[in-house]
Image (cartoon, rainbow, N blue to C red; front, top):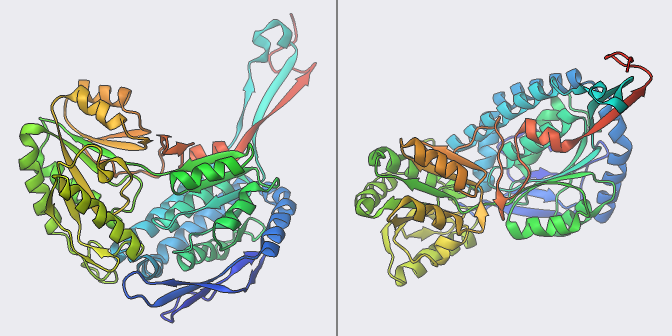
Length: 487
């Protein structure tokens, strides 16, 4: 693949054993225009076998790079990605309909993630254990260090293909592993451009390979005995399939959500409504922590819903390549049609559509659905699209129980100044994180991110992923002790 130009379609290839390989291609059409914007060579069974064999042979070489060398490469890559933010944003707009402002934001987050991974690489170490504190340990020194697991498979989703690839690949390399990347079919050019920038920064091709393909390719990679760890982001059903196929491998699974945001009586309704509007529809709601269910005290619900609908109606939907666009398209027409259908089903059962409800192909005017039935599909399932629901509640214990009814548990938002409610929510909500003073849709890339139940296992962010990408190796040195040998 050449450096990004204005020529379309972008042709992307498989990176196997240090070389770029062609094969039959799969078209990716713009969800906005319908034109072919990228063509990805589809990996064959032979490509997968060669990549796995090469990864197995390369693991020791990559592990032999010092943490300082890995960190230097990641820091250089961070600068290159930051410099390339506009071309990355353009590719994201073309392939996914993501507004260029959001695309630049994703590129800058990816640059930060690379820098964070570099910093974590410099601190990988171990311990001298207090073995002499027990009788049998006197005269023995026990030490540990974190050893790379070897071969990692990283399977990334379409909604944030660059930053999520940054998390998976950068942390894996920081830990000293070699990684096989399977990008999303919807964003092959964006993903490959990011890998190219890392290679330009000095990432050895022994440390990364890229294979394009569908579920069959994923099954081959995740089932291989060569692979030691798998990082997967996607749907719960796909994640469960990965886990079944992984045969005891280390797993980091981020599988989606049905995020709740709770507004309390002491909240500033104007502020809460504005934040819910902005974070409920960024990336057309295609985020696992996007605001989906907003719970509001019953006496305040009409006031809040009106403020929210007004704020949402001011968001500009349109061409993702325009700087003034707030909301681009969804990933494809079928996704937009599904979300609209769920909203209309809720309306037929008594809910109110406060704003939105028109669709132009894959572009959906953002929807605010007020007071749907608690068992409505748009309430119960992960929407992953341009719609939020507003629901009333009568007391705080009730809303905690209602939030926990979901089979997902990724993040929750909470608008209150009451410390008792804050600690109760933190203690009792079945989620991986609670955001106070904001919605569920807030993430810092240096803090642990992940959920419970059908939202997955493990935690993403460089520090915590490095724990999963390494294992503790112990040295027991008998008859020598830093603590002394006298019993």
